[in-house]
Image (cartoon, rainbow, N blue to C red):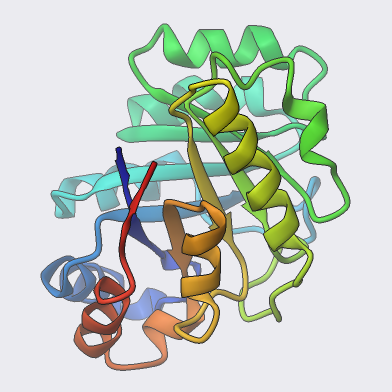
Length: 221
């Protein structure tokens, strides 16, 4: 049984009050911190690097779920593991040697996930679903927070959940982009069990949001 978890995407926080906001979401009951790492090449934005990640790690007890939206993930993986990443996500679209990179992450006792963009079919992952730790379904085009949810992302989640069930696998299914309380239940029912939320969490009362989200939770088989 895999329990639904709420991950707070700090891309939407007030970076002038970063430590304060992290403490607030930790107190509110979020399960993990999701860090979007952008290099201005794979996506048209730049966020944070290993040094800031290391500082974040030192201020929280929450596990760090690091999403590498970068053009050369193999260069960055070890740097973010050293900075405190508990989980590393890389993109299917960007690495020619995905199998090798996934194995190198797992060898470091770090959780390894693969992300797919809105235009990428989950069927492309079938050859690695039996040994990765999870799939991140991007429900917006990566690069910026606050975008609207792409509805056909639900079909991808259902596809992955069915594959997971039929093949008796236990990889997690994450979803990120445009998630709020209005659509979170549909994502959970489709099979997603790690829900990443940014704007909807940070732009509202955090305690109220987490309480309402937890009421949506169920156990996914």
